Image 1: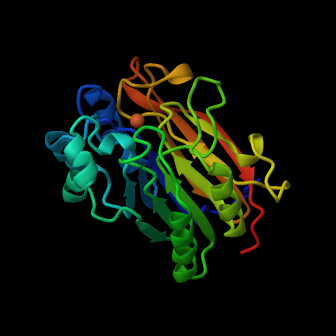
Image 2: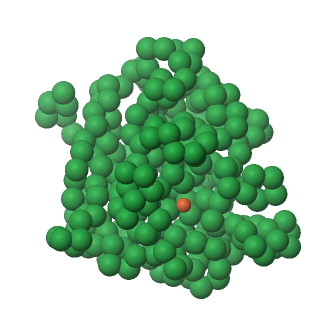
Length: 280
Ligand SMILES: [Fe+2]
């Protein structure tokens, strides 16, 4: 399907690191060994770097990020990166430690190899601590950011919380107003949505659950499992996973990796190929 044409962009997508009690150091070490061999040009971290948004957890997360290959990297916060029990802090300065140790940009933009990737802060520390939100204002900001970024060979958005329900009908919910967001992303020619939060992978298409206006294509959804914690759920209970995306002119390939304790290594277990429909 790809012939001999090279990918113009490869991305490592990890998520839900959960530094703190659930963090799994052996698995993280396996990722750090493998990452330099993956031949990617960018790294996406889709939230929940810590378990309880504590200073020492952010320090450990920062140290881990610094050990990844030195590549353009986009990081967004998850709901575990704002304090749950330190209520005063949650209301007064929910992202204070995240900003201090990870990045002070809560809506980062990554331009790499003619791709434009926009991160969205879907945490809602004051209203929806677990399930997240995406506001109309954020959607307007995303539209403006894509416009300002100019021509792109591909547009991608990243948000911690899911726009699609988990397909295994555990009780997770998609974010409220997800369909409004998806419609907006379709209008913007976004081709891929990256996320986390569910602690199990889901690689599919918005058409799987929402017909949308353009029923011929939809948007590819890539939900990452927990890459380095013991909090895997459902089919990925006690499992750790990540993805490598390869973007070609005519296709998008999502390679799904899982950690195996027998080999103490991440191994590729599936490969998902999608045709691209965008004309830009
Ligand atoms: Fe998480």
